[in-house]
Figure 1 (cartoon, helix red, strand yellow):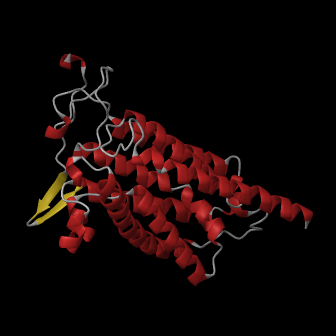
Figure 2 (cartoon, rainbow, N blue to C red; figure 1 turned 120 degrees about the horizontal axis):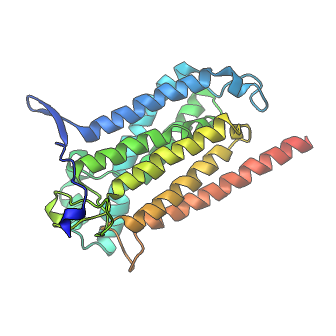
Length: 296
């Protein structure tokens, strides 16, 4: 049974040790996502052909210098939002009501007895949905301070977010975490974590990297550069929320999630529902705005 699986590529989660400092692939994935996203978004702002038509009329939503400053705000939003999202959604809400997984041991009471656990990012535990909320708050504050249109810059930002999602899922794979369900497909792998057991499983991290990372990135870039959907403000954001929500929902079917709170429904799938609701609101805004402009 186990001879038919692909060998798991054992990669040390720590790239290099510099004395007491360990440089981990997980941290590098955040850095790579932020830097590449910064580079591509800055170049996008400088491509004048993208901004010639209304409602931009030759003016990009922001300058390349603005994007450089935004990266600092976004980094804080990702880290603070991602950690607080994990503490509230998983550590408190899920563990406090349904949690029976090993990750829930001592939670949520542990946050009260040892408040340091709330900020203990080094112990693991980051929520994409929390990080997304943190970035949106940071983006809103940044746009308010710089007097930049929040919706237009938000649309542009969604075209590079999948880069970070891709690297994050690759880091999950390297760490041998968030593995999939037991399966007999030819590409199954036996993950080295004792909690996964000696069973062949779906490499669900790679599924997510492919869907949330590569495929969503291509969809967003084609929507921007080929179909020029940024000319309907909020439409790119709607497509992003729709795509991520759908891909995450599908990926959770293959993932051996420890956050299932009804027979087959996980927290990750439940969180796709508000993603779809936000997408619906953005679709309404995008097409309503065009109709209002046309009547004017």
